Length: 161
Image (cartoon, rainbow, N blue to C red; front, side):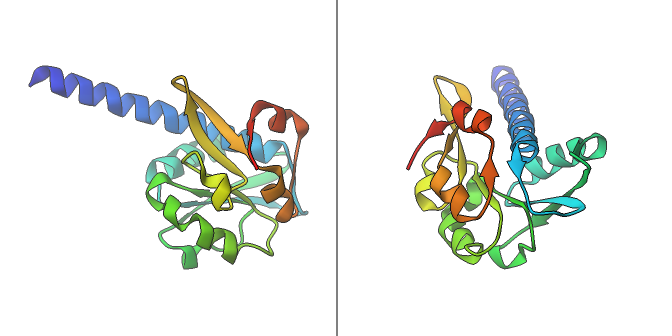
């Protein structure tokens, strides 16, 4: 039983570490995007409280250029307000086509927590390759939302169409 608790604790630490890395990736996506003029960089998280915590930690000490980061939580697609970035947690990834449809005319970067979601409308989808955190990127989906991401970011991702 003690071994199971240790393994559970290690798994929790690994999950927390992964959430930190994903939050840093999201911050870097924000820093390397071409966004409409605004005083704020609004990032909405659908269905992932751990990601909200990690992004709020970054927002306390960092800005995106001269923009204040504002982190919002949404429990459903209808709760999503104007945002520059929408992160869809793994428990809500089945909603990605609906999120993409609701946001089709908005300048927003859609990010999914699961690989393969670029085929469902995400611009970026986190995935794991050989145990390492990576991301898939669909430039067409990003451009359809009138957002530009730097070539540096594009070159680091796994291009999918």
